[in-house]
Image (spheres, helix red, strand yellow):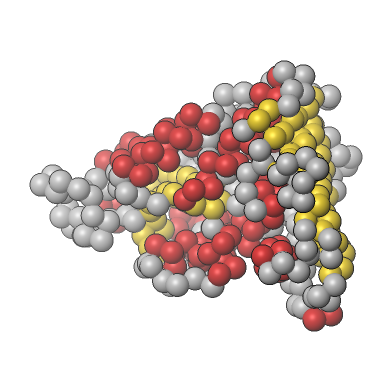
Length: 378
Ligand SMILES: NC(=O)c1ccc[n+]([C@@H]2O[C@H](COP(=O)([O-])OP(=O)(O)OC[C@H]3O[C@@H](n4cnc5c(N)ncnc54)[C@H](O)[C@@H]3O)[C@@H](O)[C@H]2O)c1
């Protein structure tokens, strides 16, 4: 049983609670926290998985209530708190952080120092240096850090990743990601809104398109070495972009390892979310996974693996968040318990070495765009 605290009971928390409701035999939500305490109370009263959780209005109050016993030199999440049985004093193993992007690193470091494993909503941070500090703090405090990119667990995506790993697409030439969603002005203007701000949001590449950036890198097999980006604010009254394009490149130009990718992104699609897709062109394969959140195989052509031979696992959803959270949590629990994970799930967990890759590329795109589309080498 993994004992967790959930911090940030806003818009995305419902997706997490849907998953956690179904995983109550493996994960126990001991605490919920939101600076808007009504939201935390609401989570406890309305969601089965949170019904036994203690409620806090600040991360400091949460960590103090669950701090280790005074004579313990190091936090041991498995050890029962000496204070006894009250709900808010029970020990924690991990924390889920679903706060505005600009708070991720700071709160993550507080939790790492308290000895908690961290399951962090994307992006890891807004600034690479903050992300590096967080990774360093997790290392020093010997806690695990997982980044939430739930789309990696979508069944069609899992099939595609496995096919690429097995070499069934031959050499990969190019990958094209499209993120054509809708975010009206009201989304940026709503009360307490942090979206569209440089300090808390970082921009649509960080908040919306980072899943697609992650997917491109995962399928390409790592971080690109060259990139450029163009960002524009065409319609919304915000500090950051509402649309943009990035060009990424792997390998040497003119050499067989050369691979290119583009990510096209707009939050101005009329009248609603239209497409969240990835198209991959290889020597012996061409696959498009579309829908609104890479949830549907729209085309699967592969010399050695026909669509008819597979259960491609397409599913319908209007949600741009997909349904990957449950598999993600299952994989996290297994990893923390030292269980052997199926290869496809283990590969989909964003942790360890590749956790900063996304952030490095995001910052690169921003820097390139600030320089008018400058080519950046990472
Ligand atoms: N994985 C996905 O598909 C996905 C989808 C949407 C959002 N997200 C990410 O999840 C995170 C949250 O996004 P959201 O849309 O739920 O935002 P939100 O604004 O709806 O929720 C954030 C919550 O944090 C609370 N909060 C703010 N500051 C706090 C503090 N200092 N201490 C405690 N609580 C505080 C707010 O009151 C709010 O309830 C963001 O990082 C976002 O990028 C991920």
